[in-house]
Structures are given as structure tokens and as C-alpha cells.
Image (cartoon, rainbow, N blue to C red; front, side, top):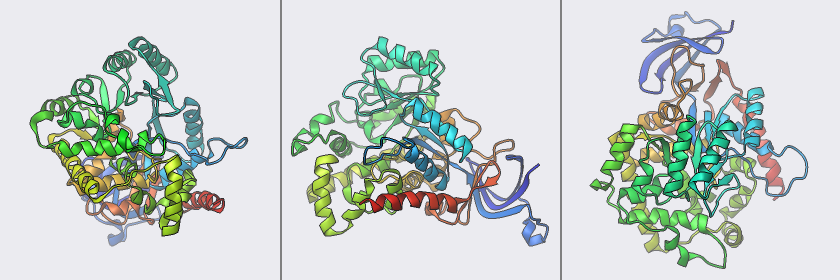
Length: 477
């Protein structure tokens, strides 16, 4: 039997922090936890099977990401899921032990689960394709134009092995009701993308999670209306920048909202009572609006390994490259430009959005952390760390932010085998040299260790693999 003893100055079990904890691990599982234990190294009682760290915690859960890599040129042979695998390598490297895939093909998910079982154990939870209505915004969407079609598609997804049902942002109220009712009949939770959705739609029993936070403006007090209508005048060059400019308009609507008004009280109370989760996806929102943040992301080299076109963002870090790149983006991935007045308005809208996030947390709404990777410049693994830091910048404590990526996310997924450290659980731990409740930046440190099923993972080997792909793609520039 493989046995290890771990001594931690502090241990976060997914709910609270304990001091001086000795953890006994056997055959990949935690067999005992002793808070207040004496330090075996200080007493000279340690043996070769004892590890020591300053802070231990569960591996993280990314509550919303799409596991895929995107080649920037056609491939007629080779492994079509090669960059998807690199995506999972980045997740593991960043301390992520579980991902809720936000929309993918069952073929890709089947391959990735088999690959993970053989190479790097990471849990994938998914409902497969997203159910949506036109205009479809994803290759991994299934069209449902009526309640009858929605009922049939939910039954089909259940037969295909979906763990949950995912609804796109264009689903109408009658279709959503049909999806929820059919999903309930199959014992499946429903995850809803909110795009200017009404309160009546998002307080339906059976909804496990709504995302993103910016799509809840009508609930927070905005008048009903189409986000798309507000951005039509900002389209240029005959391009179709709907997916980008929509995010700008979605944020801008918060400028007219009082985040503390009583308008949302009933919805918040319903979410608390039903344990409905909210996944804010703040980082993904900013990266679809603010181009400078995309270009200057510190993990851009890692992102190139998964979505090679990011090498062009890297090339925009000087004035000449920025000018050329901006023209290229206008045709392929348009970003809005702002005058000073518009920038001030967006900054104020962001402040109100953050105030509403803090209000949800204070009211007891279950907040779960998702990165939204691979949104432009949102790197798998590191993107989740950055998302948590945005929460704390809003005013949420680091401890509550960590719960959003551990126990809260596990509860949302209905899993009792992840997100918490307890006797009998798998020994999946992050071993850190600093306290993330004091500074979340330590989650992104290069020197932390990762234990999966009681075995330490070679993070340096993972980094070598990831950077090999990054350098190969940079060489093509």
C-alpha cells in the first residue's frame, strides 16, 4: 500500500481554514485528518513518507469552460483533438482538478475522458451540445425551435450520456420551460445562459446555474429590450461583430442600474431558497470588450499553445504591430473602440456590476467560479485564478472566492467527491508555499505542487509540453 503523511501549517477543506493539520493518505485517499497536530519535522519525527507545505487546499473546479483547442489552419491528418489535450494540460498545470465543459461534441468528450484516464486524471462534467434557438452562436449547439423539439432533444441528450442540460442565450420562455420539465423527468439539472433574460425565466425550479452575471441586468432593474438593438449603430465595415459588441452593450446597460435597489429582492430570495448558482464570468466579459487587456495578458504565451492565433495578439505589443493587427482584427474578430466618455461610462457600469456581485454574495446566493476559457486571452487554468482575483477586487473575501472554485462549484455539480478535503475523499490537493486567503496571486505561482490521487504531478514536465506547442506555433508566425 502507498502511504504518505502530509503536514500543513494551514489547510482549507473547502469550507474553512484549519491550523497545523496532519493528513494521512493511503492508496490515493485521505484516511485521516488531525487539526492541531504537532509539526513532525520540528520534533524530528518525520520519515521519508512525510511531505510538508505551508497551505493545502482542494484542487480547483472551473465551473464554466469549453475544452477545445483551435488550429489556425486546416488539418487533413493527425490527431484532431491534439490541442484539446494541451488545454487539459494547462488546466492541470493551473491546479484545476475538474472542469464543467460549457458545450462540446460527445465525440470530443469521449476522447478527452479516455485520454485523461490514461495520462492526467482530470474530471470532465458536461451535457454535450448546447440547446439553443437561432441565431446559433456555436458549432456545438443543437437547434430547438419549439417546446416539442426541446423535449425530444433533452431525451436524446440523456440517452447520449449528458450529465446536465445546457441552454443557450436565445432560448425563449416556452422552450426553456419544456427543457426544464423534460430534464427533470430524466433527473438532469439545467444550466442557463442569461442574455437580457426576464426574472420569470430565471427563477424556474430546476435551474442549477445561470451565467453570466452581466446578462442579469433586467433582473437587477434594467428595462426589457434587446441588447443587440443597442449596438447596431456601432457596427462598421459591413462586418458582423455581434458577439463582440453585444458584450460591450451588455456591460453598458449596467450604467442605468442601481445595484442596491429592491427590484431584484424576489429573484435573489428564490435563488437562495433553491440553491441556484450564479457563474459571473467576469474575466471573459472584459476580454470580449477591452483589447488592450487581451494583448497584455501575462499568460499569452501559454494561450498560444491552445489557440495559436494568439501569436497575433502577442505581435500587437508594439505600435507597428498594433496598427497592423487592429486592421486584421476588424475583419476577423472586431473589437470596439472607445472615446474617453464611453470609457468612463463602461468603468462606472463595471463598478455597478461588481456591487451587484457583492450583493449576491452577501445575500447567500451560491457563487461559482468559471473562467470562460478559451475566450480570447483567457488561458485555461490561469484564467480561473484571474477570475477569482476580480471577485476580491469587487469586495468579496478571498476565502469566499476560494469556495466559489471548490465547495460551491462541487455542490452546483452535485458532486461530493471533489471540492472538499475530508476523510475518504480522493487525495487531490494543491500544496502552496503561501496563503491564498491573504493573496490569491500565489495560486499562479510556478513553485506550488499538485497532488492527484495521492501522487505528486510533475508540473515542470507539463510546462515543457505546453511551451513546446507554443514555440511551434510562434515559429509559424
